[in-house]
Image 1 (spheres, rainbow, N blue to C red):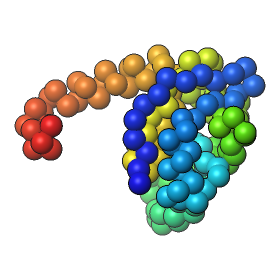
Image 2 (tube, rainbow, N blue to C red):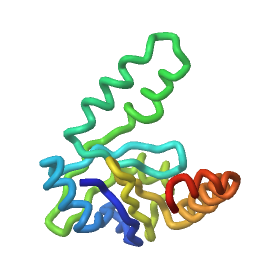
Image 3 (tube, rainbow, N blue to C red):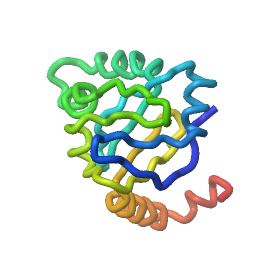
Length: 148
């Protein structure tokens, strides 16, 4: 199963973000996980991965040869990652440094992105969506080739 869909949710002043039940079910059923590895993404939001898939991601990044500029992935994505467990209300506690990066204050959008979950402030998500739409409008044949 994959994570799919988007939900407008909230984050409280303590940094607890509500994750949709369908995403928690996918996490438990498909990955056997009860927590997420949450890290920064390059669009100004956060990406949350099933904890069981995180070691493979770290292994992939560790294969980048020393001296290659793409080792910046370690500093920007691997190093800031935090394990976030669910509470009884289906929320995860997002650490202050990650909340700050994503500008998470009250209203958030939680988006299923196949093997991961992205979390954005509503303002940043509107920008990301607008930019994505512009990219796709540049190549309408691509959309047609997908059968959409």
